Image (cartoon, rainbow, N blue to C red):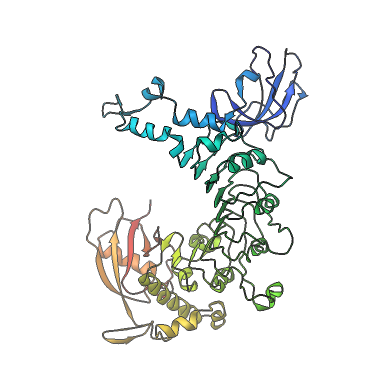
Length: 532
C-alpha cells in the first residue's frame, strides 16, 4: 500500500486500469473506498499478471476478493491510469517524437561490451509516412492504454482507410465501445482485441459487415458470446479464441453451430475442451477449412459412421466436409482407433498429433512412421511435409513391422485397417518383404543396407559405414558390431534411427528387438551415440 494525497478520480468497480508507470501492468478495479487505519479513498485492483501484495484483505479486513493470494493491491488513484482514447493513442504512437531517453536505449554492445548507438536510416521518411493518418491502413496500438473510442465521428475522418487494427492489451471491456470503433471504420477488415477482458454483452452489436478477421485471444469470451457475435459478423473468415477457458460449444438453436457462412479458420487452441462431442457441434460449418485444437483436453477422436448421422440424413453435407487442416497437438489422445478415424474426414490433408500419448514412442506410443502409414491422405504431419519418399518408406516399414507381429499373434491384423491394402500395394509377401536385383528375399534371411554414423562427442571423426546386415539382427547385436566396426570397445553405446521428416531421431532402446521387429527398412540411417 502506498500513501499519497487523496483523490478517487472517479474510479468504479469493474473498470479496467493500468499502472501509471507501466501500461502493460493491467488490472480490474474491485474496490473504491476507505481503508481502516488510513486516510482518504483507496482503489483496490486485481492485477492480471498476479503480481500484487495480497488477496484483497488487509489486517484481517476484507475489501475485495482477488483471484489469487497475491494478485490484489490497494493503491492511491494517482498511481493508476484510466486510459486514453483511440485517437490519443494514434497521436502518441505515430506522431509524437521519440524522447532522448528512448533514443539512448537504441544501441548494440560492441565486442568490448561498450554501447554503440544505432541511427535509423530513413527514420524521418517513415515517421512522415506513418503520421499521414489519411493514408494509414494498418495500426498497432498494443498496450497503449486505450479505454474508449473518443469524440464521435472523428475516428472516420482521421483514419478513413484503416484496414487492420491491433488493440492487444488495452483497457477496453465494453462491446459497445468496440462497436463504435468498428462503426466508424468502414474499411476495417482485421481487428485484434487479445488481452482485453471483455464484459458479457446483452444487447446486439451493430453489424460489423467488413470484419473478416477477429482475434479474441484471452478475452474471457465464451461460446455463448460467440453465438451473439455471429449475428454481427456476417463476413467473418477467421476467428481466434485462444486461452478463453472454453470447455463447451453451445449452439443457439440446434445441435450444431449454424451460420458463420464465411468462416474458414477457427482457432480454439489452449482451451478446456475434453469431449469430442463438443467438437462435432462444429461439423456443419460448411466453409471451415482449418480447425486448431492444440492444448485442449481431448482423449479421443470419433468421426461418425452412417448410423450416427441421424440429424444429418436430411442433407448430403458430410461432417467437416471441407476441413483440410486439424491440429490436435498437446492433448490426451492415446489410442490408434482415434488415429484411424482421421482417415474418414473427407478432405483432411494436414494434422498435428505431437505431445499426445499416442505419439510419444518412449512412453508406449508409436513412432512417426507408423502414424504416417496409418494416415493415408495426410500430406503435412506435425508441421513438416510428408514427402512421397517418406510415405513409401514409412508404409513399407509399417507392413514389415505388422508381419513380424502377426507371427506371434494372428489376431493383431484386426488392429491394422490399412495393412492388407499396403501389403498388396508394395507386393510384400509374408516371407518376402522386398525384391532386389538378386530376386526375392525373405524377411528371415534377407539383408538390409544400413548406414551407420558416429555422433558421440568422444568418438572422434569417423567416416560413416554402410553395411549389409541381416533383418533378424537385434539392437544388442548391432551395438556389438558397432563396437567392432568403429573400435569403440571402451564405450557404452546407444543407437538412434534417423527418420526423414522427423525432427528428432528415434531411440532404439530394446536390445532384444530385431531390425525386422522395428520395421527398419533398406537404406536406413542409424546414429551411433554414447551413454552420458
